[in-house]
Amino acid sequence: MAAERAEAGHRGTVYTVSGVSAADLERLRELQKAYFAEVRAIIGRSQSVERVVLTTAQMIDLGATAPAAARPTS
Picture 1 (cartoon, rainbow, N blue to C red):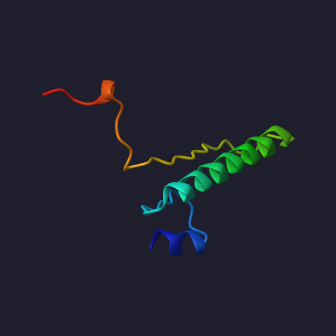
Picture 2 (spheres, helix red, strand yellow):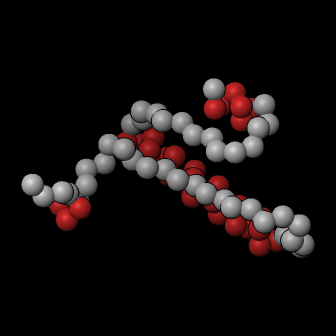
């Protein structure tokens, strides 16, 4: 449903929870880095301030193992 809303032009938060290979996760991270760099470049070239926007780009590896220091103790 979120994808349909995004394609229809709705504004707001769009998200997906997916299963991917480790190699594809790295590809997604590189894509995200390139996207955010381009966003910052466009913002830097913007000549007038007509809107204030919040831009976020989050990618959380839900299968990642927490470092030992971050694991809860019993």
